[in-house]
Image (cartoon, rainbow, N blue to C red):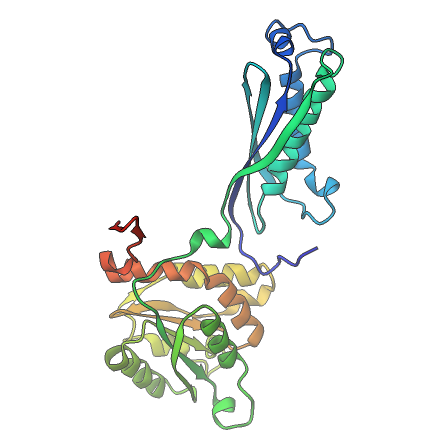
Amino acid sequence: MIDISAKSRTLRTAQAEAVLKTAAATIDRIRRQDIPKGNPLEVAKIAAIQAAKETSRLIPYCHPVPVAYVGVDFGVQEDRITVRVTVKAIYRTGVEMEALTGASAAALTLYDMLKMVDDSLEIERVRLISKTGGKSDFVEHLSRPLTAAVLVMSDSVHAGNKADTSGKLIVDRLKNEGITVADYKIVPDEPNIIRSLLTEWVNNQKYDLVLTTGGTGFGKRDNAPEAMMGIIEREIPGIPEILRSYGHERTPYAMLSRGRAGISKNTIIINLPGSRRGVSESLNALFPGLFHAFPMLWGKDGWHKETVGGERT
C-alpha cells in the first residue's frame, strides 16, 4: 500500500457511473414489477452501498476508508439502466475506487437479477464522473511568485556545536513548492536579535513569508513566541492550531509547542518547531492550504486572471 500517513484529512467526494444495456421488453417488465427475483433497483442499491463500504476487501491496494455517505441513483431509459453512485468521506485518500466499485456492484446485481429474462444484457461501461478533495483542488493561481525567508533560532547551531537540519529542510520544501527563498539565517536565541531581523525582513525586504524554526519549547532560551510580540500586527490562530493538531495525531509532544503565527504588514510569519520531524510534519500541514492566505492578504489583485478564449475572466 502507498503510505498516506503524511496527508491531511479533507472532504473527499467521487461519483461513478455504470450503464447496463437491456432489451426494451426488460425495462417494461421492471416498470410492471414483473421480475421473478423481485425489484432489481432496490437490491442493486443495497449492493452498491455494501460494495462501496467493502472496497478495501475487494481491491488489494485500496486503503480502508471511513465512508460517510453513499448515494445511489438510477436512470431507467428505453433500453438501458444508468447507475450513478456518489461517495463521500473525510479522509487522507480519495474515494473514486469506492464509487467505481459501488457502481460496478450495482450493474452486476442488475445483470444477475435480469439475466433469466434477458439474454442480451451488456454492461456497456463503468467510468468515473468526478472527484474532489485532493491536493489539486487546493491549487492557487497567484498573481506573482512568492518570496520567503527562513530563520533558524538556536544557540547551539549558531555556535557551530550542532548542524542545522530543520532550516535546510524548510528551504528545500519551499523551493519544491515553487517559492523563492531569498534569505536564510541562523541566529542565537536572543529576542532582540530575532526581532531586529524580522523587522528588517518585513519592512525593508518585504518578504511574503517568513518561517522560523526553533525556540517554541519550554526552555529558558526558547524565545520565539516572545520575540514575535511587537512584530505581529494580527494573529493567525488557525495556523498554530492545525500544526499542533496535525502533529498531535503523530506524537503527544506536539501539544507542547508554543509557536505562533501572524501578519506584519503584508508578511506572514510562522513559528515552526525546532526538530526536523516537527518541521516536516508542520510543512505537511501548511501546504497547500497556506497558499490561499496570500490572495486573501493581497485583496482582489491577488488572484491570477485566467485567459479563456482570448477574453480575460
